[in-house]
Every structure is written in C-alpha cells, then in structure tokens.
Image (cartoon, rainbow, N blue to C red):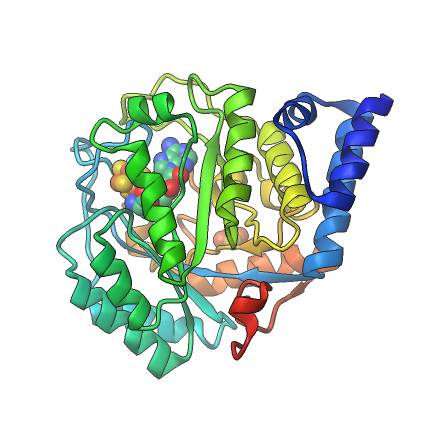
Length: 354
Ligand code: SAM
Ligand code: SF4
Ligand code: FES
C-alpha cells in the first residue's frame, strides 16, 4: 500500500482532521489503501459509537411536493405519480405498531407539502412524544423559522435536511426554485433552535467533482452535524435527470468512511439508496463507518407511491418483515440493535435523555 494513503488515514483516525486535498486523495484511493480506509473507519465507529446499530422507523407520510428538484421523483412536475397524504390518526397508528417492533425513533418524512400546517405537525409530534415516548425526527424540507420553533417546542428532537451538494452552482442547477444560501441558513436555524441536526448529500450527481464532495464533508464538519446521510444519486426516469449516470457504491462508501474519520460521534446511516443499488450495500456501509439504519415502516400500499428513485428496496415488504430482515443483517455482522433512543452522544443532547 502506498505510504501516502496509510499516513493520511492513520492521522485522520487519530486526530479527526483532514485538509481538502487530503480528502480528495482518499476519495481516489483503491486496492489495499481502500481496505485500510474502511477498516480504520470501522475501528473509529467501534471506539466512539460502539457495536449497537440504531434503528429509525421511517414514515413517508405525504408524497405531495411543491418543489421541483431535478433528481427527485416526488417533484411537482412529475405528473406520472399518484399522490397520497396520511392524516394524524394514520401516522399515530403506524407509530404505535412500531413500538412493539423495538423502534425508539420515528422519522416523519414528506415532500414539501403546505397542506400540513405547522400546528398539525406540532400536534402529531406532541402525541408521538406523550403517548408513545418516541424520539421524533422531522424531515419536511424547508419551512419558516417559526414552524421549526413550534415543532421543537412540541418536542421534536431532530431535523433532517440534507444540503444535497455544497457546490452552490450545482445546487442552483439542480434546484430551480430553491436557493443554496437559504438551505445553509435553514441548517443554522435548526442548530440555533436546539435540534439534533441531520444533513446529508448525494454522491455521483451529474457535474459533481471530487473537490465538491470534499467540500460536502468539510461542510458536515463546519455544521458539526449530529447525523450525516450519505447516499448515491439514482436517476429517476420521470425526472429531467433520467439519462444521467448513477453514483457508485464504492465512492459512496469512501464518503461514509471519510465522514467517520472526520466525525467520530456523528450518526451515519447505511442508506436505503445504497441498499437499493447493491443488495449488500447497507452491510458494506455498516462495516465502513455507518451505525444507523432507517427501515421503512410506511404501510405497503403507500410504498410504491413514494417513488423518489426506481427499484427502491422493501416495496413489497411490511414493517414487521423489514424489522426481522434488518435484525438479521445486524446480527450477521456481529452487531446488536441499540436499545436506547440513540440521541447524539454529544453531551448537550445526552443530559437527561434516554
Ligand atoms: N422533501 C424533503 C427534503 O427534500 O428534504 C424530504 C424528502 S426527500 C424525498 C428525501 C431525500 O431524498 C432528499 O434529501 C434527497 O437526498 C433524496 N433523493 C431524492 N431524489 C433522489 C435520487 N434520485 N437519488 C437519491 N436520493 C434522492
Ligand atoms: Fe420535494 Fe424533497 Fe423531492 Fe425536492 S427532494 S422534490 S423537496 S421531496
Ligand atoms: Fe425491508 Fe430487508 S429491510 S426487506
């Protein structure tokens, strides 16, 4: 193995710092150096986060979206998709069924759908906390600061808003009706309001460079995120990016591994998108730095309608089946399913939390 890779990896594993050019070098490594990178990330994960894998039950509660992100099947201009919305009782019923399956966190995710007023989401959040004692992650896209504040006051613990790409020009091209500055500002607003902040990026977007991927990792570090969701871009035939190349498993795994070296205490999911382009994708991520999985707990009849990208896994499976499947994957790796809520291990989030 070339000494240059080994030296950078060892230093990053010890100090959790990398310069932009060092990240670019690591993103280009292969062969024994790549294996060394994954092993180092796995060791950092073990030391700082332990062997327990946190499960977050994902409820995809509305496929309506007012945005037009050029990569996403939920974009408003995709008229081929039948849309659905779940009401508060349906969401509560799904969450109730998740508790006996061992879920301690639910993630409420949707397109940007103003049908749900801030008050409606606050009431649902409050009931999830009070009736079921679940940790609640929200992922509804960009909303007004007052909405974020209300939800936080209602008890929402975490918010997931991926920055998608830190390349402002590429961000502008991919998001015709959105603004990069606003995205970043929203992430800082969530931080200010005391959320555990989750960001994330896609890997392999058309026009994306290794330099911009390195900047994505440095942005996670700058934001000091509690979670970073890193997944491959998968072209959707019903979007303007239909004929683009998809991101690769290898580059996505490198991004996860480097993220782990840089951020030893950040939750890193083995993403569904990675599992959708490689049947062993989530297993590979779990041994390259990841420590979280987000199984889908949305009822069967809606899963096909939340078609962000094609060939998403688990479309014909129900929540109990997915829970069994993921439990099997985790134990086959010699790991365990976490019994706690899996809040960020940073001190400000663990004091008084379960
Ligand atoms: N609307 C909210 C938002 O955009 O933050 C949450 C729902 S959105 C469907 C969740 C994530 O899906 C996005 O953050 C994006 O990274 C991912 N996504 C959308 N289209 C994708 C694609 N074609 N390939 C991979 N990931 C995709
Ligand atoms: Fe809507 Fe989110 Fe998809 Fe963009 S990524 S079109 S905001 S659901
Ligand atoms: Fe859904 Fe494996 S996690 S079938």
